[in-house]
Image (cartoon, rainbow, N blue to C red; front, side, top):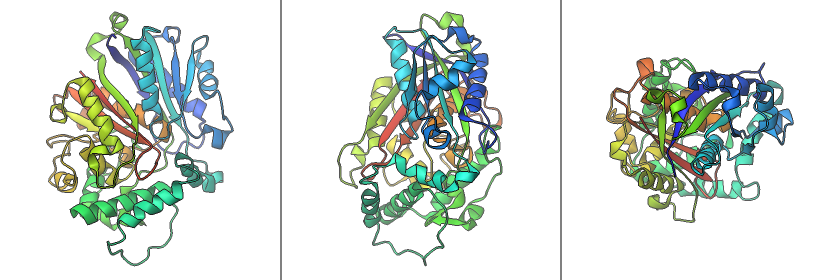
Length: 410
């Protein structure tokens, strides 16, 4: 199979876009990606449209991609709709890459678009998260995670606040990690402070104001030990990616093309909570490294799924940037900062850049492509040549329902 390259990326600013629809956001991202690639709508031979919530909030339950892309002029070609919770657009990228590798097309498009903010449907905004869990077993599975940390004393009962059920899950996982490895709230705050610092240099980020560790710890409590700035916000936004085959590369700017070395996606297997090697995120990472023929020590930069501060700690262990249980001290010592051993989430991550669920994987690609091209400005990682993205989606049996690791090369 031939190599596949990313030759164009584009995205919208992230935030609360109450005046825009999924269709509006998609059009803006696609237009930007086509311009970046220097290609026309007519060059696109197939497309993948990735979204999770348009059916719930806009009533567009089916043919979402056809509805969003045809007004832009993308018609007469295969359009596939992909929903894999937060990993939707990475799943779309994997499918699109394989389509190109098979020889079915030379130039294809992946679009991730999500609108999460609907002020008149606030209850539904939070209820929607439960659709990324098993509707029959999800609550019981969450209770199983909570039981793992029952021996850890909790502070006095916090006031109930609006929050995603996933923050309860992340809170429980964080407490288990604290109980097992001695991880501290301050180490969790270091993750958030780092990402809020990075996002001030990202013009697309939802939040662009730096925060100190002390400010993070003093923020509103959401689900102990997670404060508000340790939790990803509700975000609207879209991103698009143009991919091409080796034989089509001559039609694009080779100097700005980024090769996809690996894109591995897996679902979980049954394993004990303490069995880190069989965590779904770990399995995806190991398979990606094998496909790419590299190891974690070769990476220049990484974007990982930090829907909470604890998410980043867990995922840098899964992708092998540090050993299991060492992510707290590793982060506190500054190794994941822009000037550290291995910069993580230079974009600001989901915590500060934003987390528009179905678009998140494509947005990670946007950041890493920008880094590998050397076009990231003040958040640029010097000499970046190899990059990895870790993207998870949904929850099942105490971990992500789907995990993906993608490796890109300059």
